[in-house]
Amino acid sequence: MLSCVEYKTEEKIGILTINRPKALNALNSEVLYALEVLLEKIEIDDIQVLIITGSGEKAFVAGADITEMADMDTTEATKFSEKGNRVFSKIENFKIPVIAAVNGFALGGGCELALSADIRIASSNAKFGQPEVGLGIIPGFGGTQRLARTIGMSRAKELIFSGKVISAEVAERIGLVNTVVEQAELMNETLALAKKIAAQAPLAIEKGKKVMNEGIDMTIGQGLDYEVASFGALFSTQDQKEGMSAFVEKRKAKFESR
Image (cartoon, rainbow, N blue to C red; front, side):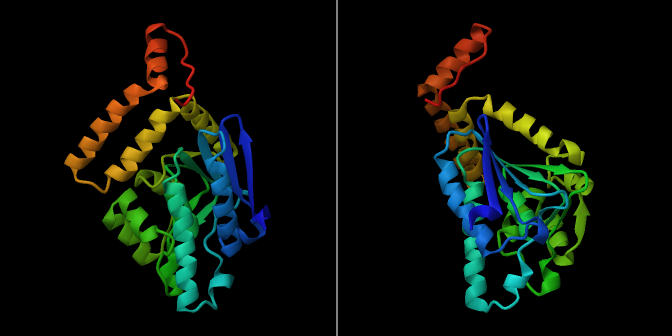
């Protein structure tokens, strides 16, 4: 069952690949289950960055599997949405940084999967959109919430209400993706960024992600208080001592996550 999602590691980098190329990597219950199982295992793995991508050159994830959804009733659809939201929230709140390497179509659930990552790098042929309204539904895996938080309410409403599909270039311009690269260089560029992140202090990155993710739902005052407390807490770590000593001594730091 887990063959629809593959996982491998490269140094301190984990690479998770949705592997249903004949279905353009569409998300069905099997894929969501496999993601949930693998994420539990990856969480205790000794990696510092996770990359999520899709197999083949045509699609990251072309959407949720319409053939599976077509005959769902309200109860079944609600459970499907709950499952997708649970998995994508797990990705969003993963303790290490998650990078989506978006190759080709990222529509519907595929766009929502990319949105759950911390950073999105897209190939030049990537396409993004939330076309669910054309099927008589709305985004069900977090699109109504994460898209607005990423590109602003007005732009998010335009994309969701119109169902239009946008290019990687437009996605970069409106802040939906961080960077656009040639398709042949997508994984090389993504791995280069992942390795740069993995070379930093792991505890600091974990704390920084947590403070930003949680602080966005606080008042600015509460968020700043949270930042101050977290900043101070890191001065009790060995990584802080090593990082500052290495800087003063003009050598490369050796972080140990403690």
